[in-house]
Image (cartoon, rainbow, N blue to C red; front, side, top):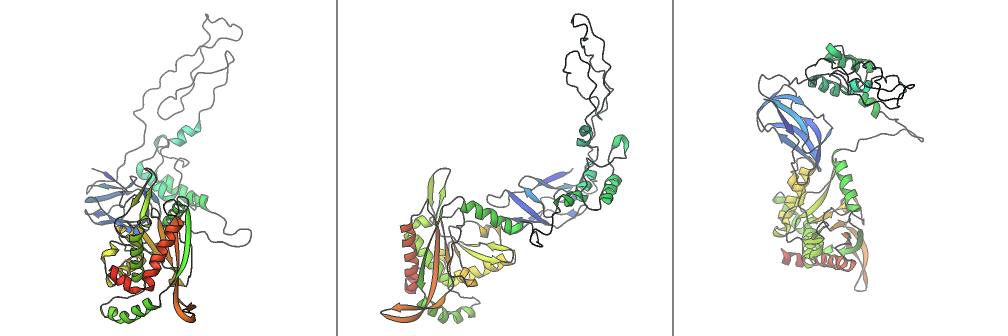
Length: 448
């Protein structure tokens, strides 16, 4: 018994995904739970397991194709079962019925009581019997019968599902293929011949564009995968939340010294200690003081939802694009625990093994463009969060301290926030709290 498997919702709010790679082919036997297909969904690469044991009768979605949740992607069957050959053929041919005789008044004898000459019935033009004809207009003037619509046949080309699947695979428009089978049925050989005559699938020919513009040669890259997810998320955030960015600097000289001192001890435990875990702790302290930055806006119900937990997203640069794995319950973890978890999540994001759940549930995001020498920026909020903190490069800067010029380690901080929820004064106070904790690391220890 054949069974059509539909693309499932494998993540929170998922509506579509891209087929990256099929791990099976038609005719393969597969067991329940065995990896079936790799899909790209919401920045994550995930394997979908087989929902049942059986044989792959037909693959309905090509690689690189974007499919919607609920759309059929593969057909399973039992061992020994052949590919379904349900034909799109007409119902049992019925004898042609005589078209009702139409009465048309003669031009010269407009009297209706006298029966007019019978118009000969028009020839049938369909493969499923006669087409129903609309009544003629124009009074008594005899009109020539209109030719049968050729579109009727082309819109309903006779072919088995297997032949249609082959035509789709080879890029052949089956409605235009010349059928050599009985009743004009399109056969497999007709599809293959059409593909050979075309040389290349018509679908690809339609997509073919010039490789140059007015000024020179160009390269066109499909917007797919992570890049596509990023594009959609950025547009949604930018055109939903009115962004405002506040900037300031923090003196992290003392924090840097503590980190340098404890770095070797962390390495002995297999942990790479950076300044980022300290920044996370400083941010959490600021969020506790100013809860409106650890929130989201429910537009539908017109409510501000204050989150009572602290899940901190860490924007991570990967070869495929920006991903934001989330450290859950960051307030309950130590500096070393945060450092270890951040490293593991970042590695998973870079090699595309991160779990979809690790990309969900964030309440506030930190993006560290300082790792690539940025100083200040205007980061885009990770919707539906309310704010995001951009961290710049830590650099030695001459600073006036107690009336003297000293070389201090300074870091630029850029806070973008949703002005619907947070006012500039609240954002500034939050930044001040973060800076206070970064400049006095003892406060961070008290928060831990």
